[in-house]
Amino acid sequence: MARIGFIGLGNMGAPMAANLLKAGHAVAGCDLNADAVAALVAAGGSAAASPAEAAAGAEIVITMLPAGAHVRGVYLHQGGLIEAIIAAGARPLLIDCSTIDVASAREVAEAAAKAGLAMLDAPVSGGTTGAAAGTLTFMVGGAAADFAAGQPILAAMGRAIVHAGGPGAGQAAKICNNMMLGINMQGVAEAFVLADRLGLDRERLFAVASQSSGQSWALTSYCPVPGPVPASPANRDYKPGFAAALMLKDMRLAEAAAAATATPAALGALAAGRYQAMVDAGQAGRDFSAVFPFLAAQKKE
Image (tube, rainbow, N blue to C red; front, top):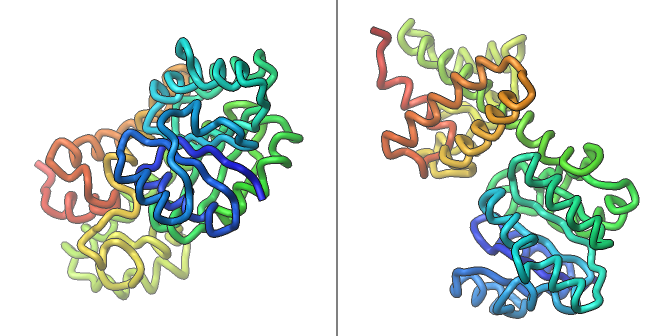
């Protein structure tokens, strides 16, 4: 079993770290929230006062942070994690599970490589439900040998671990996937709003679309209307598995990447605008599939 330093014990990081403990690994956790660290200790982990302390003696260091600025700050600033690790003479495998921009992921990976450290970018899909259940999908960027070294650790937290390519490829795969999901969910929501206004029963639309060309994961696994898919957030008053604010973050990352590469992505921009409207309307904490009731309350001028 491995000694793991885990930095970032938020809504995703905490259950991921807990699953590492369940798998028998030794986990030292660090977070700005003292309660989150205390919860890890209560589950059998140990507390670290800083990222450097979490990494001390670790064979694997995992970060799960909100944005690219936080990842760059932890790894790169003066006295940052890479510098502290090198000063200690250690060579752990670094795995960043945050969802951030591709440029930041590649910048940090390059700095790690220059210091002689192996690093993977390994953002996740599956939300808090998947984090708790240990069924996340990891999209991993990095060298093949480093991916092979990290795969058993990731397997303790997820069900599907996919090597997407070199440094930054995991982040690229994540934002492309979530751009598709964000667009698709809005298409499903629009169709159900239209069905309601045409007097078409929701269950009957679901029965047709789920068995024909309208079929999609957003429909059959995460249906945005109450009823057809009992496990979907729509049947729990849209309690978030993946909050609208997080979907907006990913859509904006995709939008920025499209702009940087001169890629036409009009549908992505439109979908991002709608999630922005949800967030601005005070619905940031609702599940992103709550775009259905959000749209249902509107009428075209």
